[in-house]
Image (tube, rainbow, N blue to C red; front, side, top):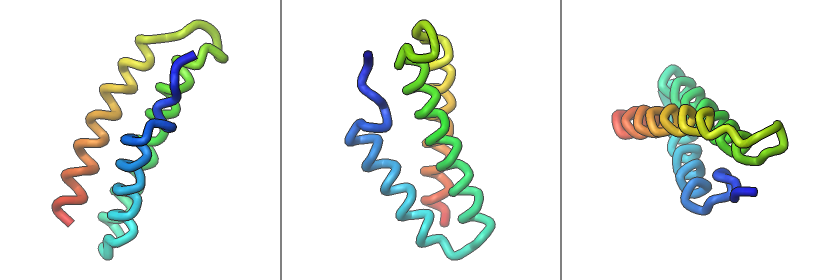
Length: 85
């Protein structure tokens, strides 16, 4: 129905950039926090994709909107965390 967010080139590049930056973190606590944020971000992208796929019933833009807001917050937190490392 709609193109998947996780198949978008910008999203893929950003996720790859975050993943590579996390791999270079030496502090285990910061690394774990960043990895958890990245996983949460991927989960929100999955929720957005599923909410517009129509396979789980009707399209639910409210769920997608909520996940989009959460994903923006997670992206911001992850960017700040990786800049401080």
